[in-house]
Image (cartoon, rainbow, N blue to C red; front, top):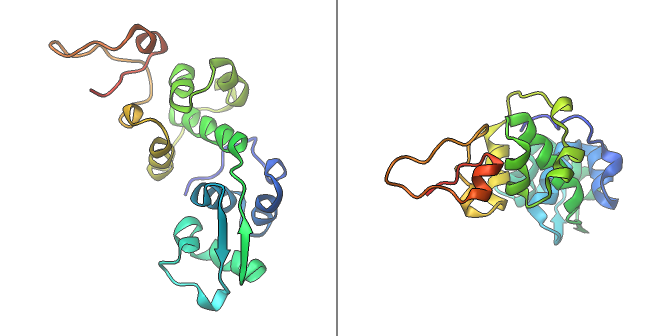
Length: 175
C-alpha cells in the first residue's frame, strides 16, 4: 500500500492498534482496523497462516507474520478508531488532489474539520495507491464512487445538472 501521510503516528491509535502499529507498522494497524470494522479478530499461530486467511488479506504476508508471532492463537477486540481513520482518509484524499469541499462531502464532515485534519499547505499533491482510494470510496456513499479530484466540470448537455450544493463545493456527481 501507500505510505501513511505525514502527521499520523502510532501514538494516536487506541489500545491494541497502537501495539500492532509498533510491531507491524502503522499501515498494517490501519488496514486491520478497516478489515475488522470494530469486531473481534482471530489471530492464528504463524504456522497456521495461509495466503487466504483474512489477516493476510487485510495486512499482507509480512505484517501478518509479525502480528501472528506476537498474538498467535488470540482473539483480539479491534476498535474502530473512527477519528483516526477519518483523519487518515482526509489526508490521503488531500494528497490525491481532492478539494476541501470534495473531501468534506466524501467523508461526511464539515469543511472546517477537513481544514484542521488535512490543511492543503501541509499535504502537497502526490501519488496515491489506487487501492487506497478504492477502499476509501467503498466506505463512502455510492454517489461519490466515480468522483475525480479537482474542480467540478459542467454537466454534459441533456443530463441533469448537479444540485447547487454540490456545484458550490466543486464536486461532479456521477449520474
